[in-house]
Length: 100
Image (cartoon, rainbow, N blue to C red; front, side, top):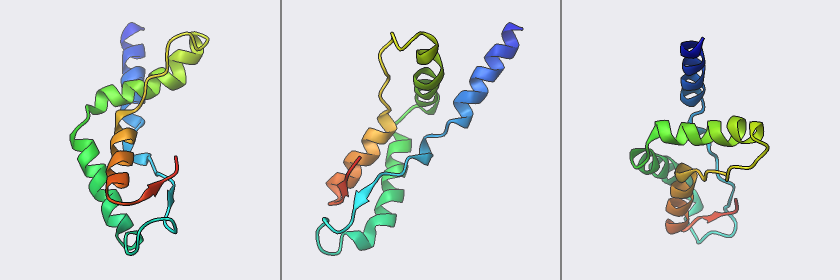
């Protein structure tokens, strides 16, 4: 029974992929010509972020925030996603206006 719970937990961690993050960007407020490079910049920033995180730990953060924390009545602090922060900072440094 314990092994089954471990397998389910690991499956949840693997399924909750970080690459589904889609930042909300205001292209109109960006500098001239920056919006034309958005898709290239987004894929580059996602690659940089993915290379600099531990996917298992990021997956655990999702499981913690969405499953463990509510089960413990939101007493533990929320764990921030490093992947989102890296993608957002990368896009901002490339001249995009990220709203979220």
